[in-house]
Image (spheres, one colour):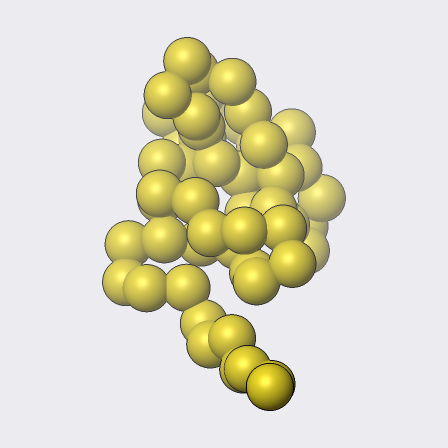
Length: 51
């Protein structure tokens, strides 16, 4: 069979390849360590991911 993945649900960022992550932006850091084409997301342990 085949399947089709859609966009991440509201409140989440990312894509179907890397996965969807809760929107916890890095705006509170005062800087964005990610590329301009990526979203900066803070994880549960305050780790930073660029998706």
